[in-house]
Image (cartoon, rainbow, N blue to C red; front, side, top):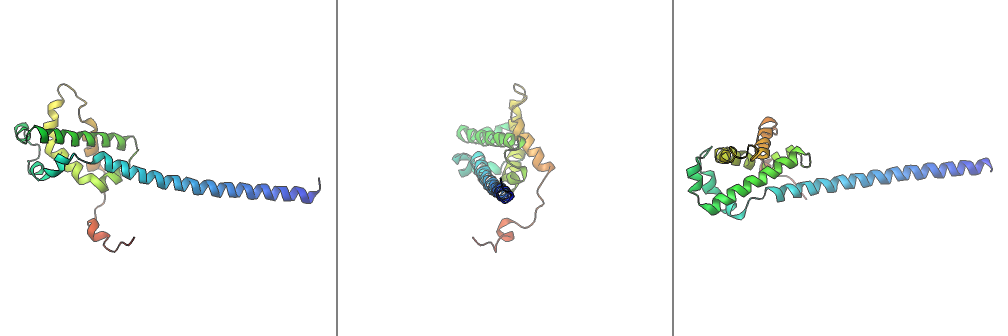
Length: 167
């Protein structure tokens, strides 16, 4: 085989390898962007409180921290069930953060305040489940502890910090 033909095949092979590497890099970056979007959507779906919880948020958050069980019961069975469902949602979210499926900073950015507030209001109430099930709401508590341990460096609120944002 002539030397020129060998050189031509080597050049073609090198170009093919470089083009494959560029293509693979572009595909990997697209996959990462898609994964980031899916993560954010999962986070929003995971932490959406029940409708009843949202409609009665004022009544719920007027309760004192570590609200006594009788005050929580006084909200009524439907609202108490909505509170439990929201806490279960945060329980699931804690596990997703622990398994590194959702980054802690993203949780803190989008819902950190609500997770902290909900835990402070209802940790005493949720503690009633611990004597019979020591693992009750363990991931919710773990999530709260991690948010307190690694808080975001807060600056201006989003409506001020990003007021000049354009689509």
